[in-house]
Image 1: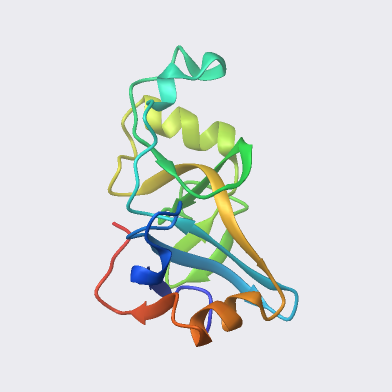
Image 2: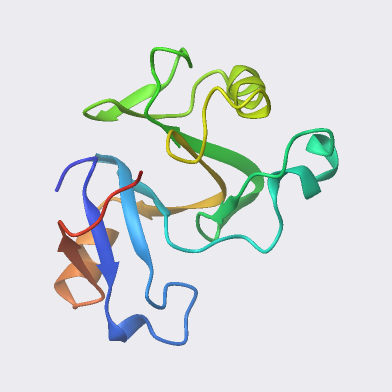
Length: 146
């Protein structure tokens, strides 16, 4: 598996946070894996968070159960948002968040260019492989981010 892989949750994950989850893996190495649930919206919009109340309404995704006190983002505009970590093709994780917010607020970038997440999914070394082997996840190529 590599960064840029999509995983679909199986019925073994029903009745859990990951029921019907589609995850985009953003980091995969000998320390473990990191990714984001891309198909679950958070119940509030970006501008409903106190710190960003002057921003435009913009969808937030429920990225995962880990570190839900922070925002993360994936984008496909490395030409506009510097310092992102390349994942696959022109898709990047993070970067200059203040610039990303400015570009969202002036509509230079849209939901077709960027996804904002609360929380992420994380696995220690070999944990994701174990979950795949037991049948909780399967790779899929039927998904896109944007």
